[in-house]
Amino acid sequence: MKSQWLLPHRFRLPGWILLVPALVFGVMVLHFDYKIPGLVIELGGSDIFCGTQDLTDELAFSLVWVALIAIGFSKERFEDEGTRFIRLEALIRASWIYSILLFAVVWTVYCDAFLSVLIYNLFSFLIIYIVCYEWMKRSWRRQREDEE
Image (cartoon, rainbow, N blue to C red; front, side, top):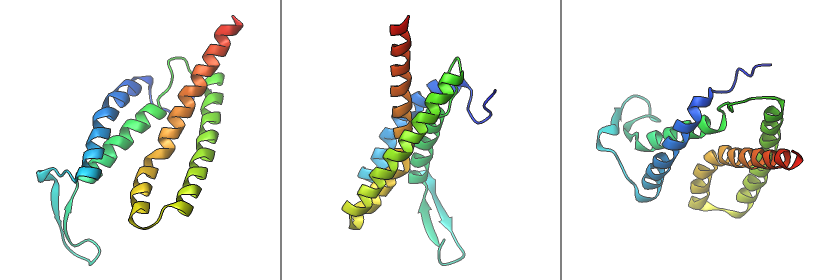
């Protein structure tokens, strides 16, 4: 049974290569207020979308997000039922961990720090999923090697 929702395997390596500079860029934008001069647009019209908007933070977010999607949802070289089971288990574990972390954040972080934590929280589910998946995949491979 073919999975139509996974990217081809060739997307994984470019995802890892893109992730490192994207994370550095994202940290520069978020913590050091880095701006790219040419990415400012003039918005007109309603009260919500008026003034100028710098798109540097949107670019940083998009680069990190695309890299994490490419890493997390690329097929393995040999995709089988075992790999699908590991993906499902990793997705369930990531959902639980993410929910517990979000619950803890809601009850322990307040004011402006809450907004910063929520920005990081946008990426945390994919990061947790990737870590769970890679860890479970390695454990499964070790277990198979021990059986042989």
